Amino acid sequence: MSNAVIKLSANKIEEMKGYYAKDLSAKVPPGAVFSAKSNGCTITAYKSGKVLFQGGNSEVESSKWGEALAPKEKTESAVATGSLPSDFAQWSVIGSDEVGTGDFFGPMTVVSAYASKEHIPLLKELGVKDSKNLTDTQIIAIAKDLIHTIPYSLLILHNDKYNDMQEKGMTQGKMKALLHNKAILNLLDKLDGVKPQGILIDQFVEKNTYFKHLQGQKRIQKDDVYFSTKGEGVHISVAAASIIARYAFLKEMDKLSAKAGVELPKGAGSHVDVAAAKIIRRQGVETLKSITKWHFANSGKAMKLAKG
Ligand code: MN
Image (cartoon, rainbow, N blue to C red; front, side, top):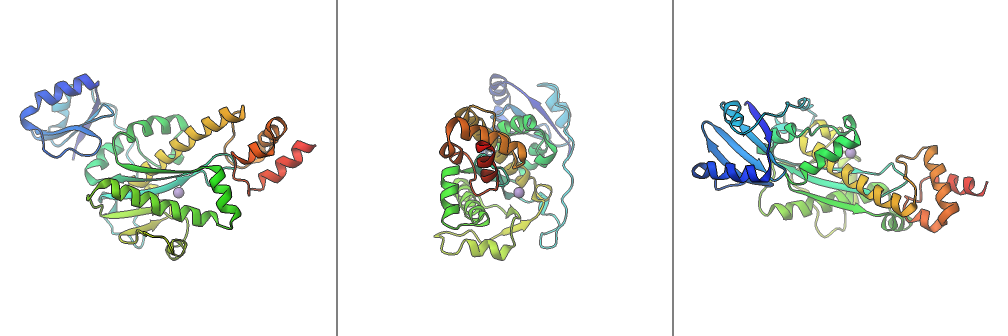
């Protein structure tokens, strides 16, 4: 199916809505201002300002309103993994992913995001793809569109809570499992009866271990849950979740950098030890602890550096 995307102001979109008044669809997709069927194409205008034209006449119809945005590089077609149906990439799916697990500074963020099959073309046009191939600047721009386009649930595990759970003996794997389960349940509640065909978690443990971590929880989402490594390439919902999670992580890092008075580095390399030592000297160990994952080896190295 051919499609075209243009970007318009809110006023222009209102004007369009008037123009297509007779052709408006009763059902408006999440994040959209209106949807209409006219002249052999489906027109969906989103709160982000993007307007998607789908169908044979999409080029002609979109040119009435503006110049089509350059088509983004297409995401690679899904890798068929063993347990997934071959057409899984075209399903309506909740994708779930986390960010910040390998960073000494900053929280862990987990996002579940819903990409209905109708939304998949728009997400591609918005440039959603594996965030490893995107710069932070691109991620921020895409995320700002995404959060107005698709339903999602974001959970942030701040450092104090993280360190508390860790000191009580909880593994990072268990924390991830608890957060994914909660984010998925929150999103299902938000979807209010809309049932996704599947739920894909970017795999960080074996399925059995994941559910073992969840034992004793009041609500456990078990039905339709799939796992796949490199989930971003398997369904675009995981790529979208990953982008929103990264965006949330970056925003938190900005806040923490302001608190610390230095730009906090990402990762867990030796540059991180140096920045951490600086914070110990200026503001003390407790301040450092409150903005880091304290069980990482970086904390010991930073203490040594700070004394030296
Ligand atoms: Mn992941």
